[in-house]
Image 1 (tube, rainbow, N blue to C red):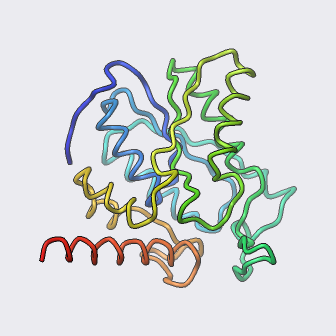
Image 2: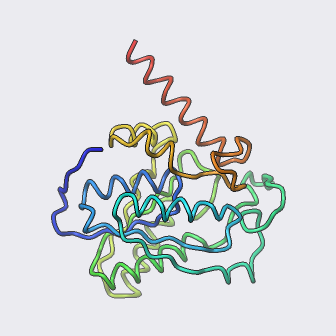
Length: 226
């Protein structure tokens, strides 16, 4: 993997699930900020794919990144969805799958910001995207920008929420991983499957997006190299 540190002594906190997107963001952050100035924050919110936390812990240890794990499992007490219970994953009338966890990214950003301020970091990085995604409202750029303003006002602190993948397709996200020298690493070690199958079930919306994006990127790469 390429190593650089153009951001000097600035610190970054990466919201890190162990999935394809957040792993790509974490590796990019390490190269931009340096491993000593990059921290990961992960969340246990009762997700059925608990294996992602095991992947996240392993990746952080492997890359030498300090990780903080926040317990938000009490969320299960007041919301119901397919991400946190063993029910079939389906799409709603509005096209958004029942894996939507209301307010999840708002909580993630809030806790990440609190942690960031505590360690003197201004940059909070999240891998949300509104291009190739499941339609979650809290993945939209307008929400992230509004949350950035809210956090600045709430804590009187100059937070900078970065979303490197916001306008990338999944194929372009794979391309970014490749440009970072980490295509194989992300492919082998990250976890995306909502059902929690190690290596992916190939059927849930998250697996389908991941596999479709990888297939498209590899095909385009092959076409260029021919």
